Image 1 (cartoon, rainbow, N blue to C red):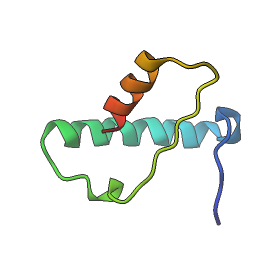
Image 2: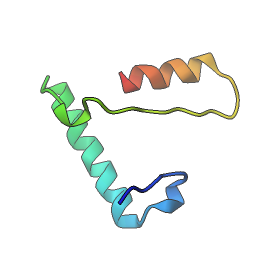
Image 3: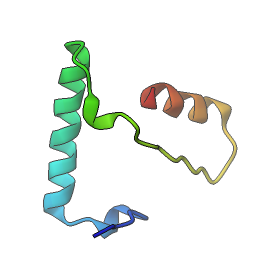
Length: 64
């Protein structure tokens, strides 16, 4: 079943805790130089209310 995340309120507390734990795991793996195959062929979309080159570039760097 496909779910769309439009706001953090769409997630349960348990889902938020799980996402944060997974983010920590991925960060450790990345720092160890391991290949993150689970993220290959994934797409990230960004939407901002106001134009900000600094914010956009910061997010793009983080995503990369």
